[in-house]
Image (cartoon, rainbow over the protein chains, first blue to last red):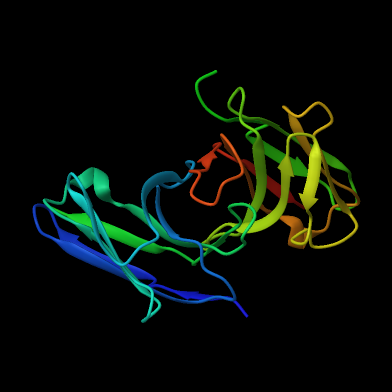
Length: 111
Length: 115
């Protein structure tokens, strides 16, 4: 079966750092994606990890441990505009990029 | 256009009506995906096209759902005899190729409400 777990909601303060965790159990694994989705808008791509380790991109970093079925998204220097849902998605098939999504983590950033 | 577009953005249907949702992918993108997103949930895979070929329709909930991409560009998702449980946001995404690491670019979605 396919199972992707992430916290439902998180809150943080502007300027702080927040870590959003994602654990997965899937029948296949070809990489893990993080997307950001503001209410009523399209998901937008943040990061992709296929090898173990940390990928850094500006204020956002993403980490993957394949042996533990675990990833996290790290957001630094939080801004009010970072208030959104963050979706963890695993690419599961060998031939094309079929994504299995978690339910998303709603992040609220407060002043 | 620069991104994926979908129309209509909002659709209200009476139970039992048929609806058609349109997706215009990024020009030249080979792969096209449809997802269904219920309120407060992540997107769920419905179907996948590589050019005009529908290679995976394993996520379509019932035979009331039908998708096509006849010329390998624009795609239409059709839902026949809509039911209340079909109420959701329907997202379309496209990617440049079919490779595993290809980023999918999403459209804004069509919010379907079935009364």
